[in-house]
Amino acid sequence: MATKLGNERTGKASPRLIGRYIVTDPDICHGKPTFRGTRILVSHVLEQVAEGIAWETIIEEWHGSITREAIAEAVRLAGQAFLEHAQEYTAREYVLRRVTA
Image 1: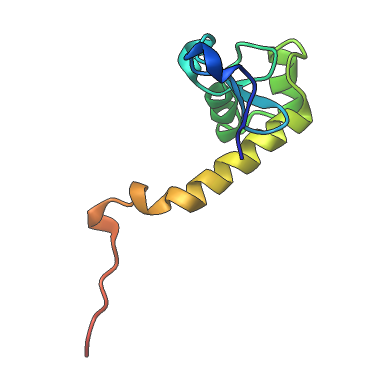
Image 2 (image 1 turned 180 degrees about the vertical axis):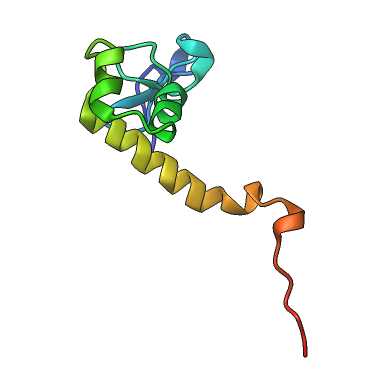
């Protein structure tokens, strides 16, 4: 569940907390999810995880700007999003059809 961080009276989109470590802010990285207090895109870190890079190495590559807990939250939220939207990513040619005998 996202939590608003800004003032709605300004008419400007407010930053939102997506989790404890992940935020979206229209003024940072075009509103794409980043790790709180950084400009590190969550998608970049998830790509590193998908490539099999060790989490400790990822943390070192980002100079300690993200934590193991932040990566875990990103992976957990990505998994939830996938489960909620899996149907949208299923190509028609891979949809199984029931065969009648």
